[in-house]
Image (tube, rainbow, N blue to C red):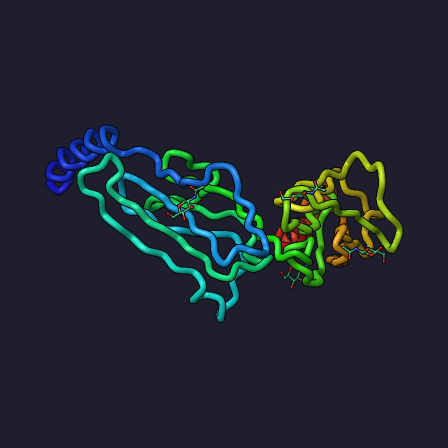
Length: 239
Ligand SMILES: *[C@@H]1O[C@H](CO)[C@@H](O)[C@H](O)[C@H]1NC(C)=O
Ligand SMILES: *[C@@H]1O[C@H](CO)[C@@H](O)[C@H](O)[C@H]1NC(C)=O
Ligand SMILES: *[C@@H]1O[C@H](CO)[C@@H](O)[C@H](O)[C@H]1NC(C)=O
Ligand SMILES: *[C@@H]1O[C@H](CO)[C@@H](O)[C@H](O)[C@H]1NC(C)=O
């Protein structure tokens, strides 16, 4: 009985939504560069449904009041909902993706019907890298290794050192200022201490250990033990 009463409502909602829902849109499409002289930056998002903001930047707890979000309604416009996000006294660490999305979006970058994004670089005049935290990374030979030396401007040059020697001409390596270095086709001997150094002389260190992809080892063992010892198969698969 319930199914019958819900169905027409759902249908109406479907028709209504295809008619009126347009993707949200930010007033900064590609990217924005915020320089040391800028006291704040502001993004405006407009849409045809309620929306919210999300970002990848690492605001710390005490920074949270530097982010101000306001909502307005424009009932007689094509885009009824308008929201503005303002970050005051921006810092390098605020560099990252900023998303404006309707309710229920999981993948902000992929769902272009219900979310929009832009990338903001915040350069304070002295730091080339967004963060300087030392990290430990354990990856398998089947993974990609990302060394997260994102930059505070799109054109900052970054050199990569492994155990204090510069890494040059490795075709498995690529750089994107919004990601850092990406290493593909890893081998065990890629383990080591990596350091990114920017042209502003700041650096980020990452201790990397590359291990054999475990799933492969386990399934090989499981196969060879399967007929001899069922018990070990179970044990190996559980790990
Ligand atoms: C986007 O909107 C904000 C808030 O209205 C404004 O401060 C900013 O200058 C706008 N940016 C662009 C590129 O128009
Ligand atoms: C890098 O970009 C900034 C901001 O757009 C610009 O002021 C600077 O001249 C650029 N530097 C180089 C080396 O291209
Ligand atoms: C970085 O260090 C080098 C060598 O110590 C120096 O020549 C250069 O001026 C420094 N660059 C910056 C932006 O501080
Ligand atoms: C089988 O596995 C159980 C625990 O999972 C263990 O106690 C037992 O000793 C194992 N038997 C053999 C023959 O390995």
